[in-house]
Length: 288
Image (cartoon, one colour):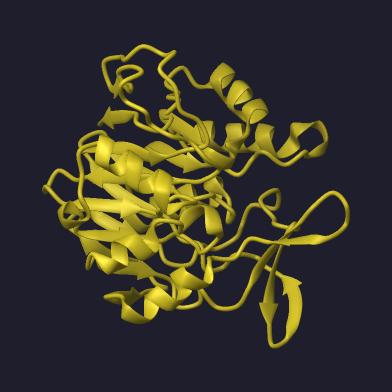
């Protein structure tokens, strides 16, 4: 299998390609970055599956085209959750007939995040995206589901790690703003020759919780975790980062690619513990 980074917070050509990772080639390839996330997976069975769709249609379309893909090439798009930075290109995909897989409550109500000044910022999907869902080939799932050979949506993720708790995110529910524990965010689990590969959107439910669930569902080792690790928040003494690293090591995870919302500090700390760590910016490709 291989996967390509369609959208990440960073882009650039300063890193060389390596045996497993191919970088964008140079200034003629203008891959764009934004605070957003999208991966494209090509499975061993030949299926092309998108995970999320970036923050804006412009960046998403630009990078998808540079990678050599059209919407007609995509078998389906899996939306991990509905925050704006994951659904910007979704309307474009729907208009081109790409089937959408997501949680039944993913787009239910407005979503917010607490900011340092004490207010809450709206981080919901745009109205145009929500309206487009009414015309989508929509598949709603909340339990473990194989959506393609060797590719499984996790279903809702049980929370067992006390250090992986959300306190900054909120949602609109029955006319009130309440804490959002992100039960609708799911991840993708892909079988590869090396072992299981877990692909996350933001990792709000916790990447360790995701790894634990994957091992239970597949009874196989988790070879790699890639995507948003959600470790950028300023946690005292870096406790969540340290405990995440320890747990991933204890679970035997061999390779990681912390992206999007992981944060520079966490990426630096993770690189000190994991020899096999990949920085997958917009336009990067990796083969497993």
